[in-house]
Length: 153
Length: 298
Ligand SMILES: Cc1cc2nc3c(=O)[nH]c(=O)nc-3n(C[C@H](O)[C@H](O)[C@H](O)COP(=O)(O)OP(=O)(O)OC[C@H]3O[C@@H](n4cnc5c(N)ncnc54)[C@H](O)[C@@H]3O)c2cc1C
Ligand code: FES
Image (tube, rainbow over all chains, first blue to last red; front, top):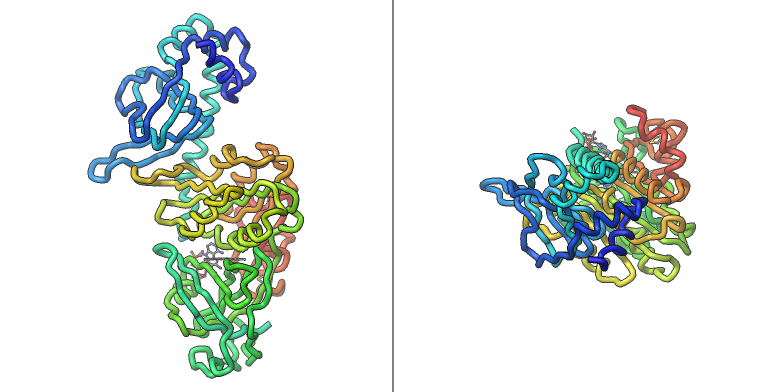
């Protein structure tokens, strides 16, 4: 576990976090690897982790009957995957599939939730960081919805 | 300035609504062609059509400049030059068919005539960017005016630091210049990141808006010159993201494709605040237009 500490400490997502909070987070982290084509999680499953992508590319997909999987967004190196572990009822809303071989650090959601309940300062720090990601994704989604490349009518 | 007669050498389909016309100066004998009756007045557009000497080679242009393409009896439209500035025999224009004139241009066949006025306008600051990293950001058809910049940079690669092209488009089927993008990508010293707004599960590339690529792209913000062309909304957001990453505002350049008519600073059709896109643009420093970009109508 100790070996993951420097990786997490260097990651922009955890920038500015107090060492004691980082220690708590490292205790919930493991290294994971997904071969190309495998699912990291699937819609409806229990959301019990989030991932910091170290290498590779992950597609967030939604399965549309008669059309197949549609990719909503891709998440690449250095980015954070998954926030459903943070909000009840803790279920994934999309499928996440490794497009290429993907290495990531998985952070156990149950473990983190328990620590956040015990230490609300840690909880605030994490929620603040996820709120920022959620805001960025919302802005990007709004731009996507604008269909800026469509022909003006 | 009167249009020069050109002939379509080739029409290449790029996507379902976009095509590239390769034009060559028409020969003397071509000037008798009935499809472009020279020496007439186009009363509606008020553009005098004389019988100019056709140039034997394509006039030199700088990456970022545009031509006015004229179809007799249909109209005239500004279209960026999308070809290689080192190629003096062929003029390339990549066009998206959106309305009357562009649809008529799509219907052209090899041998057909087109009138060309130009080149007009400002150009990408490629000389000023020497010694710096270069970030090219294109959205949709906006890749067309950046392609000559890519050709120039690749021809003079040693003059630049890291070079990265970020390209966003609607779906994988809307990607322009596929084969060339693959070729550029294969250079060790040229990064190409592509993203689409929507894709089916078999697409292995990025999905998301082009602004998301800025954070991932390898360049040194403080020593970067950014050049972008695409929908204005996209450029607004991309510029903000570049600034957030640390690129100085005065090193960001955008190409504005507001509609124009005379292309010589005469009619006021393209006026954008104190700026005339046809005369001062289309390539403009972002600092000068950033406040105007949010004005609803100009
Ligand atoms: C400097 C400059 C460079 C350009 N370069 C290119 C290029 O390389 N390739 C290319 O395909 N187009 C380019 N354009 C846009 C092109 O000039 C217009 O699409 C064209 O004038 C439309 O004419 P039309 O008669 O086909 O359509 P119209 O019948 O006049 O209009 C059809 C529809 O297109 C919309 N439209 C018209 N002009 C524009 C515009 N400038 N931007 C967005 N929507 C528009 C109209 O609002 C309308 O909805 C450029 C424009 C400028 C000013
Ligand atoms: S198009 Fe006439 S002033 Fe610019």
